[in-house]
Length: 427
Image (cartoon, rainbow, N blue to C red; front, side, top):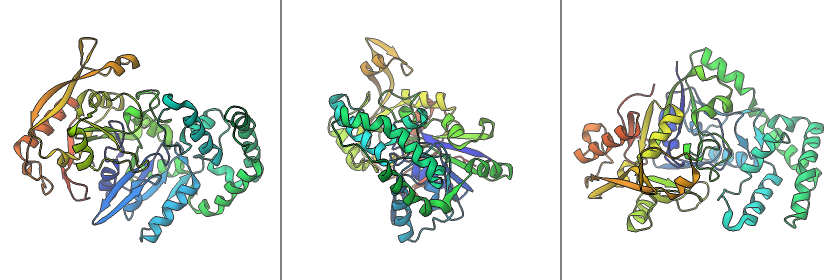
């Protein structure tokens, strides 16, 4: 049975939650493999809307086991708040599993994140201020706190002391902030231990045994390809690997187990935070996309920057992820435009460029080269098959598929769980 990776093919916010939830009823495990509560998924079930930040979307699918993998960074207070909110709405969260090797976002990680962004001023990255980057930095610097450390007070205390030795020097001498007390942090973290203990597991073993027993496992990335720390628009990126390779390291499953890699594409393009964005719109069209598409960050609450579809980015995502399929979301948002521009290439210093430039300088200077496609005015939200779409909508999808380099196997025509056209099964 297949192991599937599902990830964002743009700058995040493509509608991964809808896609994951759609598949959730057919899979046995849904695994978050990177990121933290800086990633937001909105899932609409019937007339109920759920905003998830840290929990895998599969938690809304009965019979599915949601897993937080070792590559995720976990804020215990956010985790418990999300679980409590879902429980109050009647969602069963008892099957959740959390890797004992996942790293903990500590209070001092959040503090460092916020003061660093303020200190950078105009040069700030545009982080969510939730401690994600500093936690990954601690992980790489080998002073991180892991979930399993909550169950050994001696080790936990030693690790917090080691981390704060340097951080308190920075906070007090560079940022003129008060030093953080070791015992205060340890006491707070120990307070979470009993509350999450029922969920902690050796998830690497669980997932590999599941695949050996022909279970279907879906690996769910947060953010998007262009926010990958290695393959994104650095330095305006996240601190982990949302690309397909991150699923292997972030969940402990070998690449030979992955059978399908599905990229989520929005029918136009958005991003949150700073950084280059060639097709960004600053006119009425951009405002219309933002308004009709409800483009406000689930986690940040910030308005998303909006622009036309960028086929250069889509081709790049296909290449670096080895995409086998696309799930195209929010096609309905484009209803009403007579002509829809699609970016097919860039102009950089007077030259036409068909592929994403590796140079940060070139990408900052990239100007979109547009091809105009005929639009449609018919309501497509009730379409159940590809043939139900207006001819121009069909042609738009076919053009995007040809430009992007992988088949579009599903199309979102509305926010609801059932407002999806499935062309080819993912399973």
